[in-house]
Length: 480
Ligand SMILES: [Cu+2]
Image 1 (cartoon, rainbow, N blue to C red):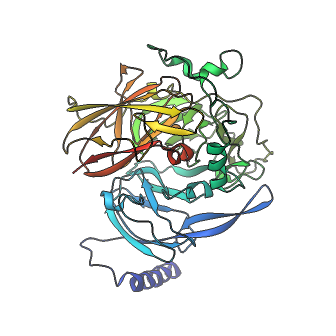
Image 2: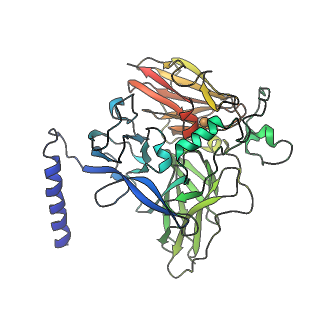
Image 3: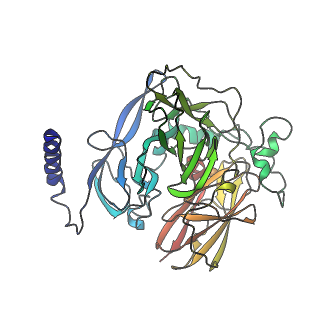
């Protein structure tokens, strides 16, 4: 114990030197240093150069407690310009970490200080600069809720991984003349009045083309905490114990279905916001989204894989929950049957614990999600980012935003600076979850969200498929 406190004292002194030059703070701060660096990651026996965002002790990303402020110095040692967005947090726009909007990207060697109140829940951080997110410039940002239960926790950060340069992938997508599935297909006539319940069907058969598609990009591996199922992370758990899984889909273009196997799981929260308990074993999770699941380990113990199934495909990744003495068997990185397309089946069952205050919308906006066929150009209200009109709202308004998907791919739509409540699915009113990223299914999927315009700025609203965003699928919500 004496050693520990001595170490803490030394650490505090060392931090003091770093923070001496900082402006005086009015409240107790938790000084954290995060450095963006290059690292070598071995994937399937081959070395790759990727990024990390870590603290001096090697911790990836950061952990905090509800009620704390984020008081942070971000250092860029990436060897190139970069900037980190705090996904799920709602700081003032100048600290949101989007180059060209809140601030400029940090040059290599530069640092920047952040200081804002943290929002509790499972969140994450990632580059919003170029295509760096594809090179794993991402990490967890966990703000532990005021939980009464002392429950074991496991964080799972998912990625899609490729040995290719991301720029090469984008070039292929944009220049290949449309060899990527679906993009040369004719646009089917909009099906007015679809119920949305057919989005979760199976691929294959004559209806496959009419079902939309997933996966523009073929990857070399799918990672859970940087590892494949060949050599997965093994988390020791107690027989009869409970585990809170904090799962983050940090993949750039890959939706997953989370599969808890033989364990029934209770949804505790989505995108860091508590929901009424919902039981299940499979849960859609789009790029950008988070889900917290509570599982109970059977008294007899064993090995319990928590898998992430690649959307509409057989590839999978995951971790293993293992009790003492259980022998671990190797799992294949491919399942027997293709998983489903992501749909709104879970969304329809979710109810926010703390919904928005009841109020009539002051403003209703519509966002049409589109594609310019054959060009790999993705649009919002008919135009790519830079050409499209920002959505204008006024401070203090309750805004309702309806997003309609005219394309054949799902788009996970993310609004910065706010959390919204899902209030409409396929035209039907719901009292849905509060979140910051929502699945808008392909083929006339329609989702309405409501938010209060209480954080003035110019806020990105974009698809969280990195290559869709890079190819135009972004706009901003602007107000002062
Ligand atoms: Cu998209």
